[in-house]
Length: 317
Image 1 (tube, rainbow, N blue to C red):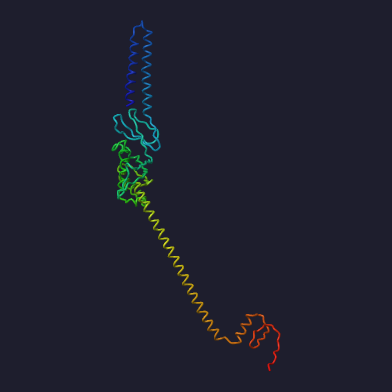
Image 2 (cartoon, one colour):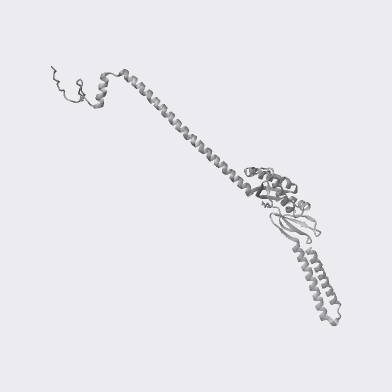
C-alpha cells in the first residue's frame, strides 16, 4: 500500500516536471531567462521523482528474516503469495511481509478464582500451566491460509485452558496432587492431538503451583492432624505394650532363673548330703578358720584352735 501511494505521488511529480520542462521550451525567445529556469526546475523535479521512486522501490523490496523466523509474503490485495526463509530476501515492492516465529514458544496459563479448573468432586483447582510449542515452518503458509495470523489466540489460547479443565474434571481432588505427573502427561497428549491438524507441535507441558480452595485446604489440614494424632496414639499404645512385654519377659526370666537356682541348690544339697562325713565337715570348718593351718587340736567338747601348741590334758581321777 505504501509503495502504491508513493508511486502515484511521485508519478504526478514526475509528469509535472516534464510539463514544466515542456513549457520552458515553448516560451518565446524574449523570455529566454525565465524559460531556462523553468526547464531546469522541471528537469530537477522529474529526475528527483524518478530517483526517489527507484530508492523507495528498492528499500521496500529488501527484507531481513531472523534465524527462527519465516516471512509470509502478501500481495497488495492481501492474498498470500508465499514465504521466505531466514536471511536477506527480496520481494516485489508492492508486496509486504509478516514475520512469524517458528522457534519454540513458551506460554503461561494461570487458573485463578475467576477461571479455576474443577475436579471430579466439584472442588476448585488453581494452577499454573506452562506450555512449550512451535509451528512447522514448512506448513506455516497453510496455517495462515486456514486460520490467519491470529492463529495463536484462535487455537492455542482457547484450547489449552479447555483441555486442562477437561482433564482435571476426571480426577478426584485428593488424587490431583498425588498424580501430578500423570495429569501433566494426559494434558500434553490431549493438546498434541488437537493441535497437530494445524501443524502445531506441543513440545512439553508443565503443571506448577497446584492449589485448592481455602475451605478444602483447611479440611485437609484438619484431617491430616487427626491422622497424625491417631498415629501418635497408636505409637504410644505400641510403646506401652512393648514395655509391658519387656517387664513380663524380665519377670519370666527372673522366675526361670530362681527355679534354676533352686534346682541347682537342691541338687547340690543332695550331692553334699551323700558325700558329707564328719571328717569333711571338720576340714571345711578348719579351712574357713585358716586356709593355711598346719596343726590343730580339737579336744572333745571344745573349740578347735589352729596352730596352738599341744597342751597335755590332766587325767581325771
